[in-house]
Length: 418
Image (cartoon, rainbow, N blue to C red; front, side):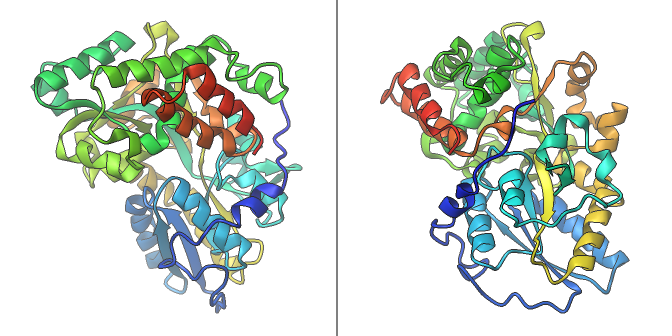
């Protein structure tokens, strides 16, 4: 197991970011006083549909506690907003954080910087799967609640595929065929967020990199390999370029944000998108039964791997003045609220995953769990958020002809650890 320690300069660097969401809270300060029964909660917009209901249920059971929730746009904006608040001395009492080290809002750097409360004595700690333990632990202390698991792949409406005589793709060639049929019918095959193009590439790389070398992350952490020297990463980018050349992506995909990429999915202009299952809640608009997901396929079914995100965590500020209320809220989310959140968000609760009890919309993932064709989402244990951010930029640079894949991947290696 490689070390996941990341320098606290991560927090210091992120703190210089401008205040992107002033409507959420004043940048670098504000009224943080609490009566002890008010919990300020910050999440990203993808969480809002599910957490709104969970919070309503919580407040019915605990009428003496008031959860004041705000949400920032998912993606880089959320991470910058959170770190600005934390570093400015106005941290929310409870907030969303990615497990591990690979994003701006990742838990491990925040814990190492002394920003999070030690939660090791909480009753739900033992429910964290072994594969995710290091993503929520620093020096044998637990600093976050893992809410659920999110298998990653293709999100689509079965009825929309049926209408065109299509099925969920089983091979990469099938994906290209879906794109062709979509264009023949004045639609697009895949809604892509160019701002998160590296994330889509990472999902493809589950097949091209990690199916061949499950230990690639550990080797990269130990400087035994690089992105640029790994043919599988070049192949992953090449596949995304193939999709682009086949007109799979909606117009403006190169610059689209994650929420913007959902719009053509909801309207029916595109047939599929490459996302974690947690995006189902944002796209389905309260009707998850109308949607389904399946793995992004490799060349064959044997090559296919499902990245599983253990990223959806909640942490408590070390400086909260509402400790008891915050811990009561986490206890509810871990227990009574778990099934509600999983159902509305499109994720799998930890209990469901342990029992192999998948909701119908995610049932296509069950055989891959059973056959051990899953991997932990790669970037969650990369050294800092710089590599994923660089990969997002690099992939678009290749798609738009500004760089070769080798040149682009070299920039990702340069960003490793930042």
